[in-house]
Image (cartoon, rainbow, N blue to C red; front, side):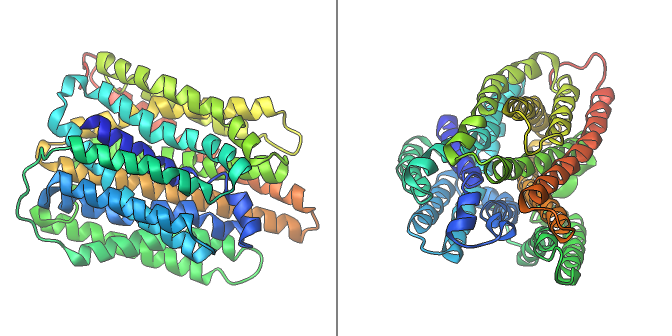
Length: 461
């Protein structure tokens, strides 16, 4: 069962980031700006963020095998829509359908792990999850670049269809119902509040980039204000409804859970922002092909795959808090190294920074998921899983929108001052990475605080 769920998760997470290398090509082929094209990734993650809070209800209300069939069925339909899309709106619509199915898969996997896997080996299992959830986006740009260079962007979806179909058939054969459905009411108003809240925040961040250097930023500020207010109302409603909440927020009463979720959010902001910026830098500024871009990002993916299970075993033996500070420091060093990239930066520097970035992620995700699930009481585990995945997707979408917006605003400002297009874009990329580097410093402080809060004699959770 775990193998089937991990395999399916790998396919859907890979699809979330496979478009990053394709964005420069799509900008030219479909005649859309970067701030619009990035929605193929940001919109995918935002849709997942909107759907995932509902999964806590779905996992409680319906059988696991039925949910798996619905999730993978939606993913396959969305992939087919994208493979046959003739314009940007249809392509984006297919991505949204894909994301709707993807949003259900990961919470199913985490809930199953909490149900089946003993706590003493949970870190090792979370290491496998990290390998899937982090190595998939790390390897996605490489696979995407090679396919794009040879076959074009539609082939990304045609090649995904048989792989996802095989995972779907295998999953239906081996997945069984290990949870017991219970009576639960769906809170429609809470779902609407979460959709408006997350959608407003992400749309507002993206709108700043679209209005850079020309129109009023009032729509961007309006979206952020409405989104923030909706999220406040959403949180208050969940706390008041307690056992009837769409997403039970009582897990946040644990300082360990709250700190881990905060650090996860900061990590995802930097990771997915970098996944969007690096291909733009390598292709638009350095002139690499999509295949060359993918190969340049391959070493980082390999390092991620090697380190993830190792970190899981360390987490089981010595406790998950041991490796957190090292991960945040590596991540921060990587972002500061990327702030130095320019029009003539040696490729070795860029590749080394990307490798360090992926190493830091490997040292972070396994202990963060382990800590979060270990401190959560079993009845709250579906809600904790929904919270973790929602935060991961929202932060990733926000990070992509934020860093692309910073890049666009700075590039627009530089162009207005008379800078050439290449120089303006390079300065914008520098600003995006600088933003991620500053955010990473906050992550170091949180990781150190989590490690210090653990008792000296505390073993594995």
